[in-house]
Image (tube, rainbow, N blue to C red; front, side):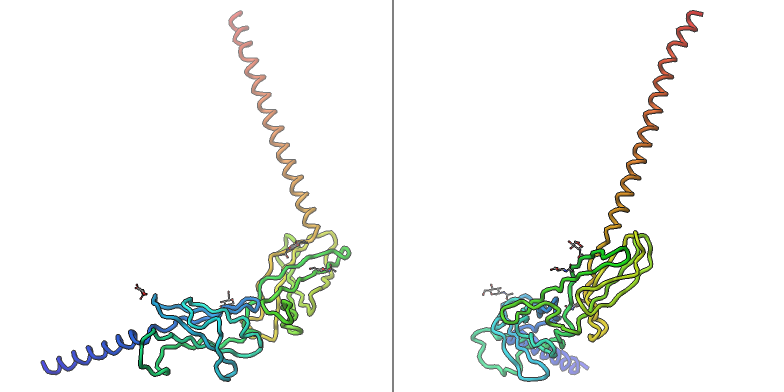
Amino acid sequence: MASLKIVLYLGVCLSMRNTAMTENDFGPKAENVRWVSLDFKTILTWTTKPSNYTYTVTYSWDDSDWFECPDCTEVSASECDLTSYVKDFDRTFTADIKTEPLEGNGDFDPDELPHTYSPHFNPYKDSNISAVKFTVEAVDESRVIVNITDTLTSIYGREKQLSIREVLKNNLKYKISYYKSGSTGKRDVITDSSMAEVSDLDAGLAYCFMVAAYIPSRPKATQYGAWSKENCTDAGKEVNIGALVGAAFSLATVIIIVVTVVVLCCQKQNRNPLTTQSSQVM
Ligand SMILES: *[C@@H]1O[C@H](CO)[C@@H](O)[C@H](O)[C@H]1NC(C)=O
Ligand SMILES: *[C@@H]1O[C@H](CO)[C@@H](O)[C@H](O)[C@H]1NC(C)=O
Ligand SMILES: *[C@@H]1O[C@H](CO)[C@@H](O)[C@H](O)[C@H]1NC(C)=O
Ligand SMILES: *[C@@H]1O[C@H](CO)[C@@H](O)[C@H](O)[C@H]1NC(C)=O
């Protein structure tokens, strides 16, 4: 019994020493490795325990060889901007984050160094698209033109910053969602181009519009860009002027009532001493 206890104890001690040695010799692994990508600006992030170790990122695509990225070699930061390395958009990238051994740490097998693979990432399918800017202009009483500005990406081609249209080409569509001001029913229009006509509107009514990039070729989860804030037609302003006139009207009514009450009260107060006086005279 006692000897069994000793053996168990010894075993626990040894295994604890082993893990301790692994940590000391080779440092902590990168954890929680994630891709964060907006308008094709792509950053790899991870978390680490506080230490003096540095990290080196390599990447590959479609299971090719591993490539180094000079900007992310022996960095102490826990993020790496991979935008300019993953610009062959429609490929599945994987990154590998290695913990560099500390200096003077003689013998080690490079395969034993701690490292963490990232999840797969395809910029063309997975990069988020931010909300677009657009204007709405009336053509006539029942039609408007929605003019959408294609957002610029962080990708450069021939010294020029490319727009999402130049990157996504025909796969980029926009969804325009609109409703009659004051009603809850929404209607949607999908457009292939950045300028779209919306027709069949009721004359003289205000309409509000919202736009989001829509990429039906992508997996469901990333098909929509962020929705823009709404923009309403000019009839909206008339409604606002109407509300202003209404507010001014009720304010005037309140003032008239207050003045009338004050005047009536004063008249009463003025009359009171008179009545007292006359009663005294009597
Ligand atoms: C895209 O946005 C969603 C929602 O905000 C987020 O969960 C996801 O991590 C983002 N993806 C990338 C690649 O940044
Ligand atoms: C990093 O190194 C400095 C000196 O070289 C030391 O004082 C400090 O404690 C180390 N930090 C960690 C988290 O190991
Ligand atoms: C709404 O339209 C105005 C000009 O018509 C423009 O300045 C503004 O940026 C637009 N808002 C959005 C969310 O696009
Ligand atoms: C659409 O907006 C762009 C600027 O965002 C402008 O250059 C262009 O003239 C507009 N087109 C129309 C028809 O309003």
